[in-house]
Amino acid sequence: MSWISKTFSSSIGRKIIMAITGLFLCSFLVVHLIGNLQLFKDDGGQAFNVYSHFMGTNPLIRTVEWVLVLGFGFHIYESIVLTQRNKTARGSNYASNHAEQNSPWQSRNMGLLGTIILIFLLVHLYNFFYRARFGELDPDINNNDDLYTLVATSFKQLWYVILYVAAQIALGYHLIHGFRSAFQTLGLNHRKYTPAIKFVGYAFSVLVSAGFAVMPLYFYFFK
Image: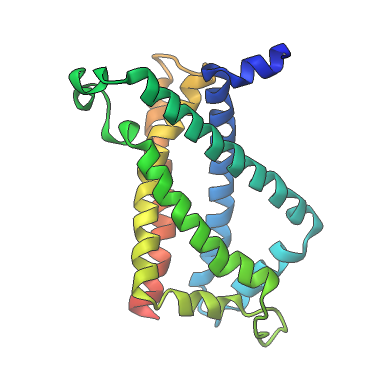
């Protein structure tokens, strides 16, 4: 086994992969959120459908999608491996160490939060991505696939709105812990800058998760 495989199969190496892929996925969330803000334009969904058409047909975007899939795959796999290793390492001593007094709730429940997000992601990908790429959507007045109507219809279903909002709450907690941990893992930890990183992490987590959560609520209650 080469030193590269040894390094990245170790706990430290896996944490580095988690940090890099996590920060990459944070950048995706920002881009995705900005694009989805087109849903709030009062134009019958035309702007959102133009945006969706561009994202679905641009060769560069389609290539980046595969990088995104790999990013999600590595992040999920490494999180599962690290969670199992941590459970094994803690053993029965975990309860006696009063972990609830030594670490925040979200850091102790990253596995649970990640599972909620993963379930949501699978439902979300089928409902929108799969049906947009491989289904047959009616065209809008500009002859683009009318993904806006699919979104509006989906967000009129209470169970989906609840799942979506619950997933964004889980995402917020997940990001609060993961954002700061990523910088620590990469060695970007300094008493002068860590408070700023922590503040940015909180602000980022709240704004991103709230930005996504408001979308189904807006359609369910106001459209």
